[in-house]
Image (cartoon, rainbow, N blue to C red):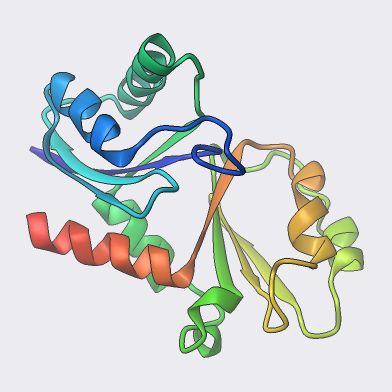
Amino acid sequence: MQTYIALLRGINVGGHHKLPMKELRTLLENLGLQNVRTYIQSGNVVFQSQEKDRSRLARQISADIKKDHGFEPDVQLLTAEGMEKAIQSNPFPEGEPEPKSLHLFFLAAVPPKPNLEAIDALRTENERFALIDKVFYLHAPDGIGRSKLAEKFGRHIDVSMTARNWRTVSKIMEMVREIG
């Protein structure tokens, strides 16, 4: 049995693509997934499955949400090991005590030609970033809300992604450990 983390992009944001977590849990359980747990309303799910093909499972989750709720979210599906690696690879441990200042953007693939110079030109003096494998790390001590880097860097990476702050990443990993 494999433990997975599903990160759904763009649900329950600004009143759009509403999907209550109770309904999401039921939908996933109906797919045969086990030990389904969610965290907050932004589409963070931990579960276990016999399925080995992550791409197929992510497509199935997205398609079933479309069938039941009328929209098809992007689903980033990580293994427990993948999430642990992302945590261990954090290049900005000084951001961990203020978890809302540290964000991890989980990418669907390794960007083929990221324009790191253009991304660097977007950052403020206090912001720092790193691209490690399929995770873009952003430490924004002044907040992410007005960050031009957070807002615009995606066009220089050109890969589907979804972001979580350090608090959420840590809580998800805690849930993974709870279900084994």
